[in-house]
Amino acid sequence: MKRPLAIGLLGASLLGCASAPLQLETERAYQVEWIGERPLIDRSHLTITLGADGRAYGNAGCNHWFASYTLAGEQLSFGAAGSTRKMCAPALMEQEARFLDSLGKVQRWDVSPIEQLRLWPAEGKPLRLWPEQG
Image (tube, rainbow, N blue to C red; front, side, top):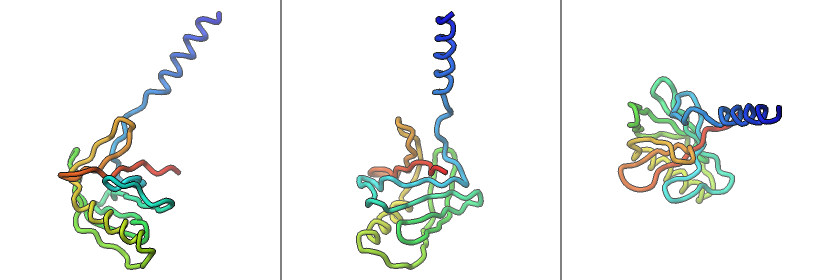
């Protein structure tokens, strides 16, 4: 009796582990973890949401940002980004400038082996993001 139960539990747990691979979704917020080769400043919060209407927006760490975007399969590009004009600490402003600059260089997206979303420029390291929880 115990053996079939163990096999049934094993089968259930294996089925539970299988999930669809991460996909780039519109109307979903993604939290930026790295900009190129550098992680974010502790407790800073940068986000990207791709609206269904072709406009992207989010938080750049200090200011809110917005831009047009084009998504075609694995190709992704952003138009010139605009933002609100609040001033923050110099380190946050520098990080925000790097983030907004990097958006303009994005050419494609993919998913890493650890299922992290990556937005790749033509050269260099990607922006790395996770879907926001909650």
